[in-house]
Length: 415
Ligand SMILES: O=C(O)[C@H](O)COP(=O)(O)O
Ligand SMILES: [Mg+2]
Image 1 (cartoon, rainbow, N blue to C red):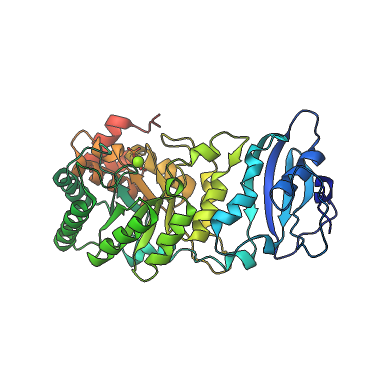
Image 2: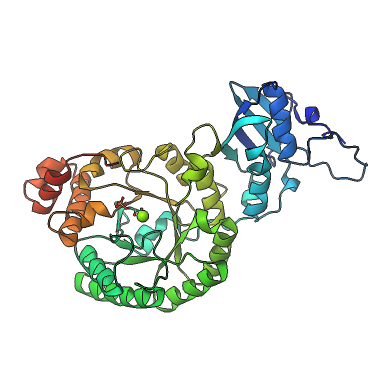
């Protein structure tokens, strides 16, 4: 079989087959190696090779990857379908983003993009609802869904949390979201928070006639997440939230499998993603993390704010487009813009990312000079102004909450 020595893993005449999984990497070869040497080592270590030349018997299945394009510091590597266990994202990542991330043959390596073949895509569940949550669970089918995160992010008692939820929903917010580090701590236990927040949701829905949602953070070990998801469903919740990077994709897959019968959508917070994607020449691009999230089957995921918020971003627009594109019939994923947004950033944000999104503000709602309900109204008014094609300043003339928000923050991008 070929592929026993790393040189055998490069073939610039190779044409990937439809079933090959193709990865694009940016690589910086270590001193003394050229791009071809480094490409061979990457393809080898990420499929079936090692540093030494192997003498392999005929009955070993050939699962070698092939580096077939090498140009301008980037390489493309094709992997045979049978290298991978279908439906097992952990195993796939142990190949395409595994040992190669630390191998000394490259000073830096970044997984930029993946072409997922149908033969792999069909082994994953994908999202149960995707962007359909906006009309299926909410009244936001024709506009961005609006979410808020109670602040301070931890420390509020359950009663405080529920009161903030009430004010935010009454002000026009669709979704109340737990923060990424709020799970089941002593000051605000999961079960009480779930019960009382959903009771409040029902009261507000009755009062306003609008559908409201609660993204309760079930992040924990996999079995506990499943137990918490059961509680959410039993109490009439429509959403669970999972910190998908910190829990790991195998745990997310367990939640996705479990929620198939529960009729609840999965909101993915990406806390810790920047450990993989912030250093520009190394790691795994957010684009790939978003692809993984779609395959595993989350319904919404944070994809950044197109550089209009407080967190560093990659190509939010390109990622959002990928999440909306056809992928062998898999549902789409609703992109979530969050992190440092406020009413003054709504127009430039929607100009960049469109309206089939969820937009979310914590500080930009609760930090409003007149409090949470006014902040929620201002956030909603900024979206209504956009819908009516009226400038925020003009809309603010007869919407005092928006006027106060714009006076306070202008169009400032926070840090
Ligand atoms: O989890 C999030 O997305 C953030 O808590 C948003 O908070 P901010 O709007 O205050 O930055
Ligand atoms: Mg947060």
